Image (cartoon, rainbow, N blue to C red; front, side, top):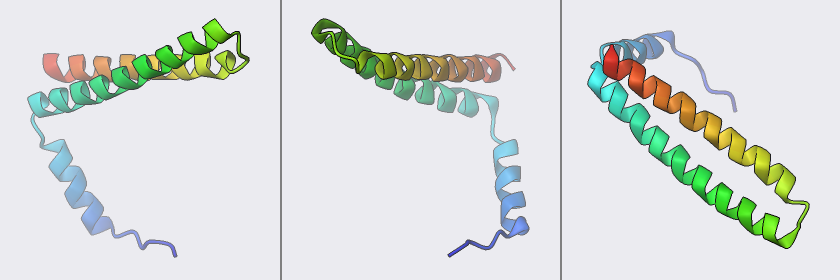
Length: 85
C-alpha cells in the first residue's frame, strides 16, 4: 500500500536537519565514510581472491570496488565541507 505523504511532517524534518550544527553533520558524514571504507576493503579482499583464482567474477567485483571508492570520496568531501564551513 502506498504511504500518504504529509508535507507538514516533511517540513518539520527538513527544518530539524537544516538547523543541525556543522560539526554534527561533519561527524555524520565521517561515520558514513568509515562504513564505505569498510565495504571497500571487504570488496577489495574479494577482488584479490578472484584475481588469484583467475575467475571471471573479477570484473563485476572491480566495478563494485570502484563504486565503494567513489562513495568514500563523496562522503569524505561532504565531511570536509561541513568541517570547514
